Image (cartoon, rainbow, N blue to C red):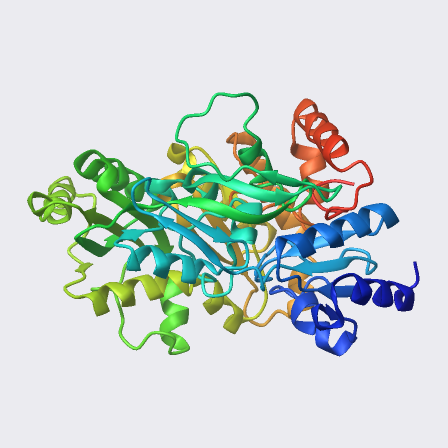
Length: 469
């Protein structure tokens, strides 16, 4: 169908106010954060009801037109933007209602276009927390969060998006509505369809609403930036604190000094959150639910110091503003590298006890490729997810550094494979890692995934050319 006819059909279907055909007005929808993909779309549609979503999907399925569901357009692997330029982007931003707040059964029911930040605030107003949190929470929408099974800093205690969701509502490829919005903690009535759709990157259905778990709100948070000598010491510290704090340990993040150096250099931090120089830092946060837990962090750090796992230079937040400054340091880790030129980035995971080996082996193997490449591994050590990034050497042109990307990727992914890890911990596959998935995923598992896709979307209209061909 040519674009003019398509535009007329879409306007007749849902109204001209809900359709964008002007390419200049599409820019915010087709320009993704890493600027790797540059295809336009046939049209943008912005339905304001589930019924409109169903109409659009039925029309697309009948005419075999590809549809990309899009949330806040914060994805980092190109899953939410066109691969061919012929697709319709279906933005869910207008489906942003709060359907229900149920503090008896501990859940909130929200539509897919509500942002993660708005969801967090709604939970807090109800006296609870929704624990998922990451740097793009102000823009990321719940539909995209679930479609990518997003993670963040508190996965250690609460799990990824999948573990914080009780059920979803979704429009299938034929336009029918899957009503999986239950609030049951136990339901053994066949296949777990909710969890099948969560993490499927919009290739199996378009999530329109979800029931999300509410968790008890801590009475306080105890946060510290701990100076440590190495990732090996960090893992030993993690084990000690986890034994001492149990489920109260909600975050354990590993950060190299290089990240602090950049943030201070470019004045991204008003105050240095550290208490002194260290090659590595661990951001440790313990949630307090009872008055008797007031000394959990300080006692654990004293024990770690006695075992010579940590240095004197430990910064313990004495106020909410100091805690926010420590977290700001962590959340700006990706941003700060952009000031030094281009970066080659990896979102990978390994068994938790293999994190030190991953980092040490990764730094060593990349140094053999070019000793001037600047490694910047950081992230969620408590759940084994490391963002293993490399900044371009000083004096090297960005394009020359990016020409080394394939070689660097191969070296890192070989280590990940040897350590029985994953090539994508929380960002998904999208376009960026589609070929890599094909070469690394167990072939039986890959075949199962393709058969599920074929069964639910026989015309391949839902986010084609993502995950696999």
